[in-house]
Length: 176
Image (cartoon, rainbow, N blue to C red; front, side, top):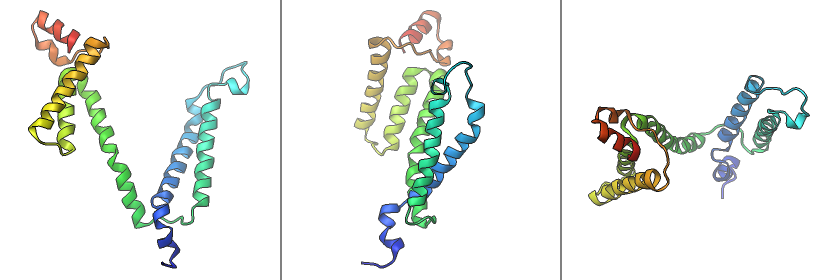
């Protein structure tokens, strides 16, 4: 057992100082921009104002972030905090994949985007066998059929469909 308080508390506080700093920074940024983001409704009581509950939330975020920082046994950033931050940032890759998907759907259409992105994500996750890729393509087709035909979700057709002849273009826009 070590007498070093940094080493003893390392497992429990890994990433906590960084988390507290980010929380306080985001809350402070929201608090500073708050007057430009909310409106004031004349003749309403304070709790009925459009910005009251968001203001309570931002104030709570700031207060509890500062309390979290204050209660930490170690307030300095350490190498292990950077390691933890890289683990957190790895999740942002999938947010980027989703944003790309959202940007690509209007261009190539729902069917091609869904099938393509499912196959690409399957490949990215390391499932590279032909069977797994075929299952991802089948899942993509199933999702499109479920949403477009089964649930009648109206998703705009892709710009790529404009090059198809009239009746075929209408069919693809309505169904895929």
